Image (cartoon, rainbow, N blue to C red; front, side, top):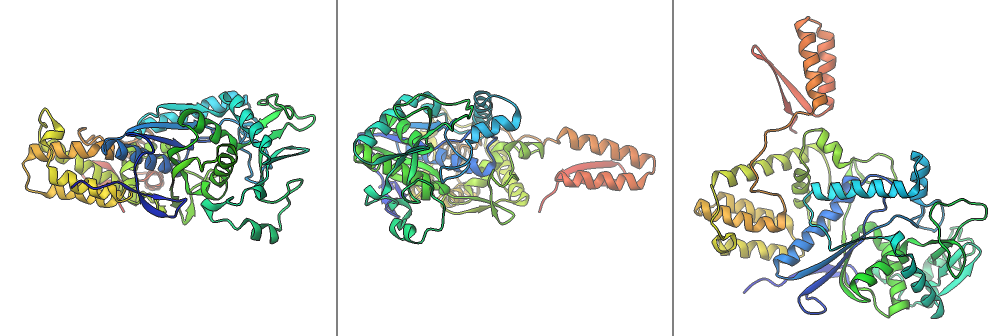
Length: 465
């Protein structure tokens, strides 16, 4: 008997049996990036979880309609509907137009997406291309009595919705009673902007006419409008990061309940944080690692993908260079083993070991338990199965892992900057300038590499541990 897929639903706070709402198609929406800057590897961990989810659904023979949005307007620097639009802020920072900033960082994000071997969604949708849909939704929400006007915008009245905040288990009444925050003209702290007016005398690059005045949409209405356009008023799974639970996703649900009478999605799923130096990885802190930073140290992107598979998506994961070293080495060993097993037969699925595939499937059916699934993979590597069967089985499992295990393990690349430092150090040693040689060794080590000296010369290697 094959394992039935079970997934954790944040809304109900439990693992539930999964089945599509209709037929064998799964409609999946993922909150995409706000494209005011590069994505950091903490952001990318969430998208990797969603890619594994999609691959698992397909492994279970479902067809997946996957939609990812691009937020290119309306995401303010504060969740309290105050501050500057992040895209406009990025434009001022870099001396470019808001449209150019959004396009530039969209391209960068999609490049990272592909380098991590994530499958393309059926739809990439930009918020700025769906202003008409958002205005129509706001008008209907207002008509139904869930919105009110202030001098700076149109706001959702959360007091009109008894279920507001259920996703995050927010005590809205208690929050209001104990609030010490400045809410301005909002009626309560939990109310949120559906439409914001351009400030008098302000020259915004992104603004539109609306029934209420010139302005721009709130961040939350954007996702609701685009999700419904491409997936319907009630679809199967809505994904995002853990940080979306208390505000963004609560507000999406509120809008959908007011507008359509649904909670938008049957399952709400969230990826957890990447921690670095005991802190959550975030762009707002001004200190974050891009995927390019890993490449500059000589890691390939799929080593980071492997690292993310070693932790469950619903647990915070600590990042370190040592853990990434371990992931890179494991991936290399996996590919080397696959190469040693020779060529797979003509039909990978038919030649794969059914028992191993069933074990792997069982672990993935348990709310995407990738650490246990990897244990099944390594048990396969150590097994006494015939090499051709092992090769076919590993390739079959890689449909979910996405590690390109059939690729030959590449020799470790030495970044050009590190190689140049090594050449300078060799020249300093030849000149017996030991102080300069020691200084250059320190610079090389700062890049994550070690130098081994011998009578035959010096060699570079990545530092381990």
